[in-house]
Amino acid sequence: MDAALTLDGISKRYGGFQAVSDLSFQVEKGMICGFLGPNGAGKTSTLRMILGLQPATSGRIDILGADDGRKVRDRIGFLPEERGLYKKMTPVDAIAFFGGLKGLPAAEGRKRARDMLEQMGLGDAQKKKMKDLSKGMAQKVQLIASVVHRPEFVILDEPFSGLDPMNQQGLEAMIRALAADGATVLFSTHVMQHAERLCDKVVLLARGKKAFEGTVDQARATSPRFLELEGALDPSAVSALPGVSGVEVLHDHDGARTIRAGLAQGAGGQEALKSAFLSGLDVRRFQIKEPTLHDAFIALTGDHPDEDQSVARDGHKAEAVR
Ligand SMILES: Nc1ncnc2c1ncn2[C@@H]1O[C@H](COP(=O)(O)OP(=O)(O)OP(=O)(O)O)[C@@H](O)[C@H]1O
Image (cartoon, rainbow, N blue to C red; front, top):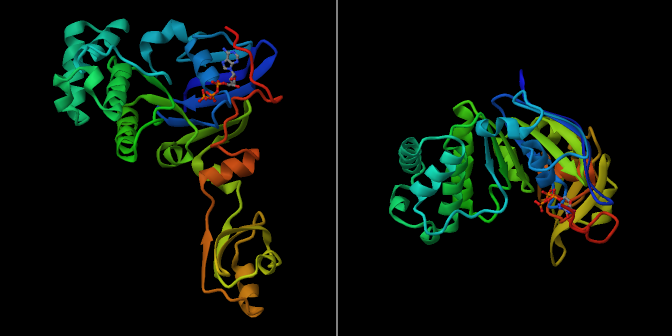
């Protein structure tokens, strides 16, 4: 498959602070790729380098055949992390305005805006001003504004942040529709569930370095399974079962416990279960659980995706450098 984007050994330094280190990955044409990592991992810095909004300290980027995102800016759509459309505009005017910045004639922009708002179930919002829209609606309008010129490549920085589950679902549907129309989509998030549902490919970033690149299933396969047991169970007896690498007590109600046992890589859990029954452990319920992408992120990086890494990695906040 042809690559729409190739990063080759990209690094970014802010003064003495290394935000991104020797990062290489590819996004093939037409795929939805999740760029995943905790806050502060270096996602926004990387997206800004891809767009040509800030220079890389070293390395090479190829986007849609260009060595600088600014050269192909009309073929790219970008939803920045900081949002805000002109408050007094109507959604149609705001969308057409952004289309105009990418060379779309105003009348065509307004027509597409009305059609897209209708398609996204935002027909009623047309009569309102941006300032009167709910946060979810405004975010959808902003996404429409960033893709109204029908870009080949769509880059979304934390598109789900601040949205309730209903609006998150709506946004997922919008992203699927963009890909179904042939666009390549790269979006950043620290919430693994969105990527798990949407992505053909994921790139995991931790502390500025790539930890993994591949499909969601390949990522999950790097992490061991879990065995969840319920009963009057002694955690130390569970941790002594064959193939168990560690235990965590999820619930404890007067000794009736739910215990999550991490299995060693390659262990299926059957041996541990057999041994639990043979040794008479009080197992009332059991479940063998496949790892989620969230589990895989922790296994691959040792970091938690919900932790904030924006504190400089030597323990104090980086000085802002332009
Ligand atoms: N202009 C800047 N000057 C100094 N440090 C910066 C600058 N921009 C980002 N950083 C630092 O670089 C690191 C990576 O930030 P970046 O915004 O790229 O991460 P992120 O993964 O996108 O997280 P978030 O979603 O919170 O923005 C952080 O520690 C951040 O404080």
